[in-house]
Image 1 (cartoon, rainbow over the protein chains, first blue to last red):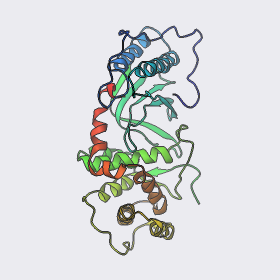
Image 2: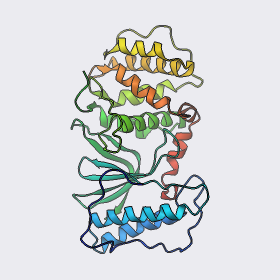
Image 3: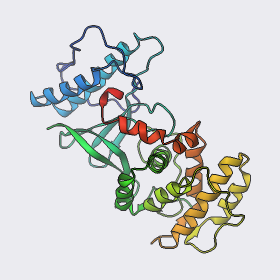
Image 4: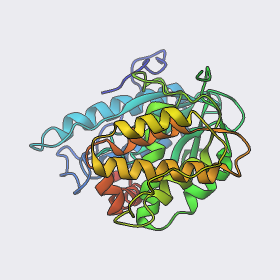
Length: 151
Length: 169
């Protein structure tokens, strides 16, 4: 489900794990693959645990494990999924960036980025990533209407 | 000779233009070429299969505009028999050869329009544009299954608008 290097491992195993409030997942909305409500709930969880003291690496791990769980829950619906959470790499400035799978070629997909230097977590719309204006070979996070998950 | 790393000019101007597009077909065209850039030329580690690099810095504003203008009329007008003269481009001969190699009539017509747009828009660019790189990127964009129709119908933009709601992951 995730490519590239794994996120930084916290000292203790999954102390900030997300537990879905609904034992039985709701069907995905038309056009989505994740059970309805799961990802908004996981995003709220990421915000909450950062506020409660989880490090950015721990929050990132909670995201990755939460998405794995959501993928399993999504598979309960015949013909649905997978719920993709690809690790694209680290954009300039320390943004470790994950992306869902575009449903069709040419489409955009959701992105979420964890800043390993500042601890900020962000999602948003727009280009997502663009060439860095001044640093050759670097890719820069660039979101329109960004939604800051934390702080 | 390709650059050792992707370089661009007019990045911020390109982003402003990208964000300003409201028309569904125009915005779909810009999104599709941007996604092609992300997949084939960005430095993100996930896209390791190919690193398509230009011989000169790419004018991102020009790249988006040339793509958007290629889809400005639909169905597209028949391309001129000759590419425009002038413009600040390099690797034109390779691009012309590539255009002649295209067997799909619709792709060939769109690609010819696109190259004409790149040549015309490059006249005011601060850097000579590698028109062959631009063409290769454009072809990777439109040769994906269904992309031309999804740009033309504006479906890519409509899907993008759904992404304000994370339930559509």
